[in-house]
Length: 326
Image 1: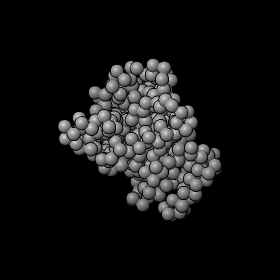
Image 2 (image 1 turned 30 degrees about the horizontal axis):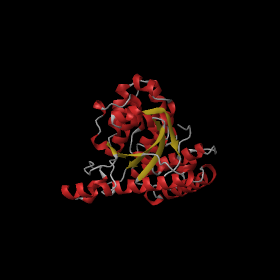
Image 3 (image 1 turned 135 degrees about the vertical axis):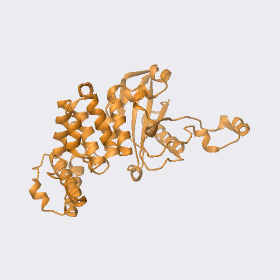
Image 4 (image 1 turned 90 degrees about the horizontal axis):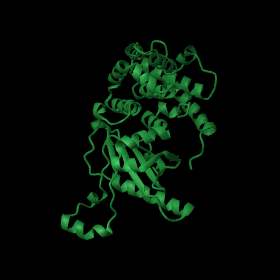
């Protein structure tokens, strides 16, 4: 994982956290090994998994959907894994159709660049929405055909099943995920359910064991994600729950210094909003190696002025530090 924290954490924390975590091949392999069918996962050489830096999610949909594409070796052939992160507020009934459209675009691009044969594509949906996923993951179910007609037309219809992890139904205690991935998925579930304090209470009890398993950068990503997912989160309260493990406490307090001002948790809602935007401006200044404005300087600005300052910094960051999309 990169040592930099994407400023999109401040505006689209779910999307930014997903990409920051799952762009790491080790984390992605750990996720797929636990959630693909065992016989499928066992057939892959996970040491060969690499991220293909391309996406076909339309830009106007990226606030609700994000995706990453991977290549992994299976019996001497490349197989592609398409992980789509779904975090809109309602379940999308056209998901299998959308996945098929992405597959078609992947394959057309592959033919242009490499010709035939095509790589198999396994699609997987990670759902962070508030509602339980009740739709079938089978593409053929979209036709709603009676059995006799389904059997008759089956040879002529596209047919695939996408994988699915519905975080609203995720039970960490019974999960086969390794400890690091359990922390990540617990946190994503807690963020959607507005139960982040319960997550930190659990992390504090897990204490030393989790601190040893989580590298410093992942801890920082978790903290930044939490602060941006819920701007009412009490930093001192969180730190008290983590006192059993100094590494966790240090990570919480160090990260929080860039995301809040003194007294952010004490004032009225306007004061909390001001503190949030002060933290966002200071965080982006830090990432760009610019002089960090003092709390005194920024407290003199209105919330609207702080938002404008952040937007300008974000524009400069995008121009100077982000690679053009492929």
